[in-house]
Length: 325
Image (cartoon, one colour):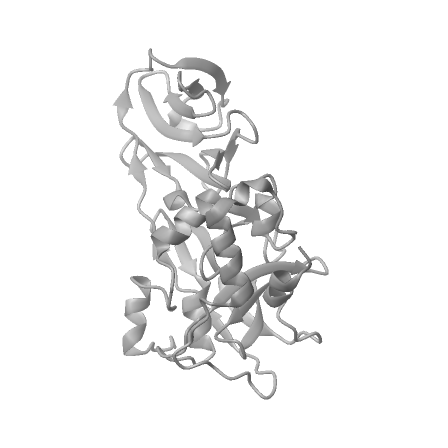
């Protein structure tokens, strides 16, 4: 029997269960300004906070982390006296895909590279992705798709030229037809974009996961990778998980904060201060916190969160913030 959810839970899909002193727009601006060669390490909890690219906005973000100024809980939660074994299914929200529009290949841009994708895309034939550079800024690369019948504009796929950019086939949907995956270095991290041929309407569709930074990680060791967003550069930090739903034929996303808050019995007055993905002893874990005096550890397995009892109870995110610079 499926558990009923509180009346207020439905609002969480619209507004994450948290209080921000910084707006999302401000956080995005800070995130953009904080680009540096160490970005990937920072995002996944192995960073020394160095790099000249931080700039003024980066200093604001660092100050927020160091002073905990954003952790202003209306009603701080208290740490449980003893470990409580709890689990909860993640609540996934559908993500809308965007149909690619037919267009002509650009004449005012420089052709950089064509990438044939073979025969494994089913009725889509043997498509080719071609990269074009902006004439004024050759670090800005746009991708176009040609399927032998028409040409389509995928969009911006890099602001760093060919560095770290990868175009390949993937199998997120588990269907016979592969997808085109573009690992796009945009901003301070990697944006994964998936172009899929939809046989139901004979159209190409793009899922760019709202331009969120993400990485492929097998969180539960089942051989199937999850598309993970570990937003250390958000204020406050948050973890989102994406997956393909074979029933609805859509990608969908879950905000770990929402279900973790409900699982731990928090109310709307408890300010969720962070969720943070980290790896320890070859195992992926999530730390979830609500105020200075409350944090628990969880693991993900097959669409569910499960609390885990670690011998070392210290906050890994606090360690990260307090590490020598």
